[in-house]
Image (cartoon, rainbow, N blue to C red; front, side):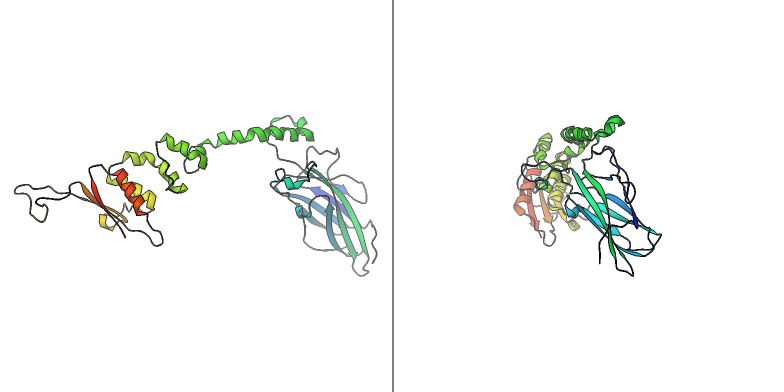
Length: 335
């Protein structure tokens, strides 16, 4: 088996993303065997890029093809896709070279050795090994292309088109974009910073101070977010059955059961004991009135916990003591 260059193949390279400002002035497709022309492939970190390879068999025998890519870039950046390997005389086929650089290419210090600058331009060569079916003779055809890693810059959209043709301009504008764009994005998403459910954890004490809500380390982070969001509603109904039920619901995640009419059937049951006291000709001893005792302004709280989700009784008592009127007494039952 011999290896030699042959003119039986015509190879064209066509990038799917054309670089508007390549360091080399020439670009576009390349046809081997005739005119030699540089081919530039633009690659943005984290985004896929493709290079279409068109192969035409100019010979008189069917060929079996094998493609390999070599270059000074990491091998895992490139993947070769082929629909078949046999190419008949007078026919052509297409293969695709898929490229993708790491998303954190510019941030990873492993991308370059100490004391060296980060490489952005790579030279590569595509080797096409073709074997004639019947004779077994193997030949090689090759094509060169350049691979450019560039950050995607939004600021290029705001400059005249003539400046987009200069590679240095795009990289220079990216420096200013990295400095200013985080502030712009923060302003665009300011609503998320002011919502306790989506705000960063470091901002929660500030949001809690807006509604005078004390940060308690006994609460989980998610509970804190819910309580800060519902603080005004809790303040509005403080001292009422509705307010106490809402607070217990936020802590225990037990349903409010607003559609259930009977209080004793609810997961959070709050029963108030009312009586008219001793009224002549209007009460019955032992039924709706008692002599010498009783607990006015008294209520009973019953919680039906869910399996494998225990309820912290001391914390529940702290909630009740905080929400109930000072003159009220209560009983707590957790089942």
